[in-house]
Length: 356
Image 1 (tube, rainbow, N blue to C red):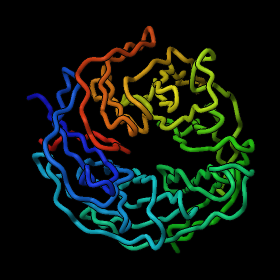
Image 2: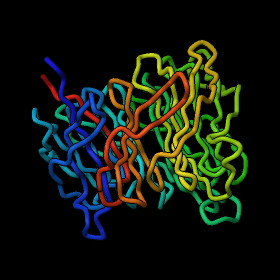
Image 3: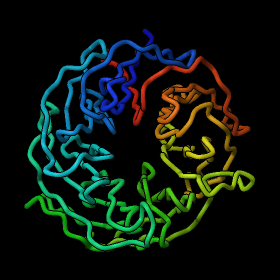
Image 4: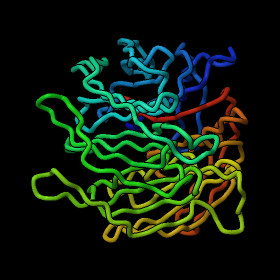
């Protein structure tokens, strides 16, 4: 029996042109979506799905909204939880499905929440406000938390702040639920660390810079006892081709291919509106760019790779479209495979396999 998938696309709703979350049916073979319906969420700036793919979480003006994913891919609201801060910009669910981290761009706050057994959002466990100033520039003069994640073993929480050009490392104590800072990765001024991801075996950390437009690859070492960690930079690689140099380029999103080894990495670039494809050496962690090509839309804020790894869907925020492309890993090529889908101001996109 062929597996069925749905996609969820979060959009701003303040213009009245979108309700918040658009549900789409997914055609895996043809690499495209078909719009089904919309669910009202106030300014869904980011959506994320639990690891068991039974719950969808969305940023909203009110905080975080949790939905149960129904057998047909529809959504049933579980609850809304206030985060005691301004609207977030990024969500991350830990591997066990016990915790949710919310990143606050506007107020420089990272919030850690508990998740209940039914998937609903529980109480705030801890939260930290970043402090300090960056360089004198539009986006880098005060704290702007852009990404916060818990490691799969629940020992550490890392917080990227593109406003003060730092990645802060916290030790998480499950006994009292407190985050205690143990180190800071100080990045180059006006580099804008935006997103980071660990590879599956957690040996390497990949850090994407919005303003510097590079990926830094770090070897991740944990000291005995877990009270200290070491990040050793082993590579810096551009997010675009040299001939594409433009001061308005902004790296937006970074995702691994869905295979178990994460053997490829993808990065989207606003300004030049491209996606770059990298091969990832599983043993050394090093990246090799295979290609960087246009995606047929403007401001590729997010994207998702189809489970067959042959197609990619790109959420183009400024052009209000989802574009669909074939992936040629060997030659590093992207080619259109379906007509674009109109979605007003898409911010974030994720795909879910429906329960059998």
